[in-house]
Amino acid sequence: METVEPPLTSLAHGGGCGCKLAPAVLQDILKGMPAAAPFANLMVGAETSDDAAVWRLNDQQALVATTDFFMPVVDDPFDFGRIAATNAISDIYAMGATPILALALVGMPVGVLSTRTIGQILEGGASVCAAAGIPVAGGHSIDSVEPIYGLVALGLVHPDQVLTNRNARAGDLLILTKALGVGILSAAFKGGRLHEAGYQSLIASTTRLNSVGSKLAGRAGVHAVTDVTGFGLLGHALEMARGAGVSVELTASPPLLDGVAGLLEAGVRTGASGRNWDSYGEAVDGADGLSRATRDLLTDPQTSGGLLIAVAASEAESLLAMVRADGFDQAAVVGRVVEGPARVRVTG
Image: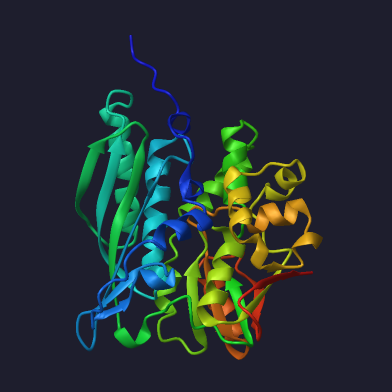
């Protein structure tokens, strides 16, 4: 008699980028870390809350390095692998780099999941790496209580064209390449409340490579980029504001994935959105005037979310056209950068 395996999401206490430590907790942990010794070739390190580390190799090349992994956000093993790999490689694109190779990070409950299921997770990740034009060149695996999968990803970019989250300028417009609501759809899925169209919307968004990011390096008017993941749009916009010492205004009505609006009205939310708000809500101007639904949306953790791009207003229209032509149909202007303290205001 064939053994029936439990659903992947039932084996994890959280899923996707909702597993990330809350911003306040992470900040509290990192503040006790000793300052890194100075290295002349370390262009981007941990001190700026950026998406990846950058090491200058020579006058023409800089190495971009990142790692990302998490527990399942869906039950299909192949799709879980695809989502985790897409999410990990996104950090390379967010720096304007082109990926060159990946290493797999695998932690699986070997006595609970079959080797076939584990193999399908790895196959899903490898398929995304193939789509990105890179090999899975190795990795590491352990026997763990919860299923965990992700990648170490490496990429290359010209040292003069590295994109970070800290160079936004007053007057810039903010373009988001993907619609919001991944965490809300994920919560509905775990609760058995997600319809098929919503599930397909979730998969399509989370497995869409942010490869357009490599086209942003050196592009006129592009000043700062980050990818929107576990801290939600508000949290990552706040990191951008703090990095540049400016204020950010966000729209209360960003583009939504299919089915998200109805689920918001029904009160579907993730626990991570509440933790996010508790971590940085005090830095949001006019917070008392926000509806609970707006708050839940803007703090919603975005597993494999879109790129948030700060671009000069004069270049925004052409950049938006380019991003949409690259397959990001719901890309939209979601805010702007203004003079002021490093805070966020939600408008409209």
